[in-house]
Length: 274
Length: 285
Image (cartoon, rainbow over all chains, first blue to last red; front, side):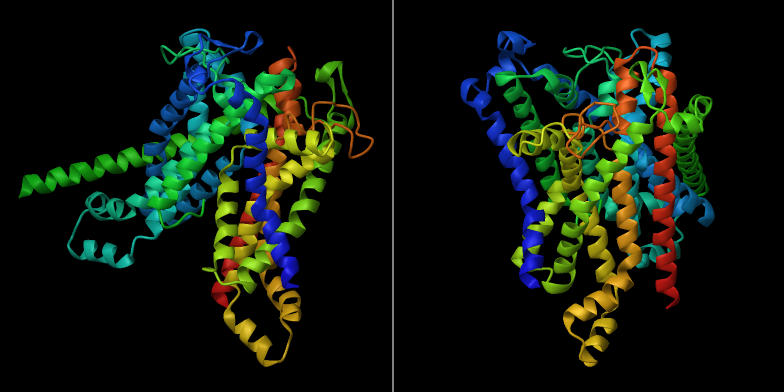
């Protein structure tokens, strides 16, 4: 019985290693032939002519994820505070379920909604519509539940004695939140934000559908961009040889990004159930 | 003193206003998305749409074969992931201590697995299942890729459910001379079944929602699949393809998105109900 269980657990645990192994094996031809700095210094991304500059995709990924974090962090923390301290009990449970349902909407549906609703709206404001801004807005909606639910868990972990102490001192509600609740829940909230960052960096479909997918460094919010993940999804169907290997390199980069963020979150926060 | 107090009261009201505004904005966005999908999709939704084959690259016809492919991919994924996931959870929860190095390694790797972006799963599935194991673009390789994605959520829910079973169950079973295996199958697993079911529903939802991991594993073909080795287009890929690659596919994409979101909302609500009912029962016990 036990060896069977151990075998199953071993298989489950080795999936991650298998993923890393296959990413490494498939990207090896590119890593061997193309030196690392060429991925940042080549004149352009043009795999047909042997040019592999990933820098515009990297900047696109970071702009989109960073913008989404800037918007989702205050909204998410406010949502968590709303559930924990402001809403009436019944309202809090409804709102929490709503946030959980928001987390369950598939990314392709977010992308489709962005494409049919947000992009035309932004187009009226400033053509072409499919832009960094659309990507940021859609990503915000997608990572907001992660920030809100982890922040809520961190708020719940604040010892009730602290709150009673604050109430006994006659502190106002916001004074209590600002002075006691947020500082003691800080680590958990930050860990949640980092997890959300990982999700934003790896998100593919929604971003692919709304950002226009032009390989360039964005000069403004209204410029179209292309992210690393979107690049993989777009070019993988026809990529061969070194091109395919270069796409696996970008997959490996994504994976390492996310693992680094995860390590950071684990180092910061004790509760990691996200 | 009085001014300090009024400053505090002012700040309090402002914070309250800001937080209510944020909550209202989130609710408004949710209602906006949902109403857009319902209003845009309901007009094209009918029984025929659910059973017909797509015609003219999806601009006309229905989604019958696509629903079948989605179901088959889901079935393959669950049949591979459930036994593996639940046995791993049993091992982690019942047979080894939480701080043993093997348990720690398994948990850590599952934790990393849960954070791997879905496009990376797609790359891996393409390289491993489709090419290395020579399954090609098929429902089988798509389903197995999804199975890898589902492992963390199935294991963590089952593990938590088993850990929540009170220790008195295990002690009384031991006192009655029941073997550990009997205890597991007759007592612990039935007691943890609501959380197993909730994990199953959540995993199903995750699998049905997935697109990026299936793009280069299960493929795009929208015919009725003849076997598990045929390529099959899932509902989410159908939405993606119609809205991005097919001019004039928006109407059908809307209706497909409505079908997908309805299925997912039902799954999520069912999972929440299970979890809530289970918590209530535990409290009253």
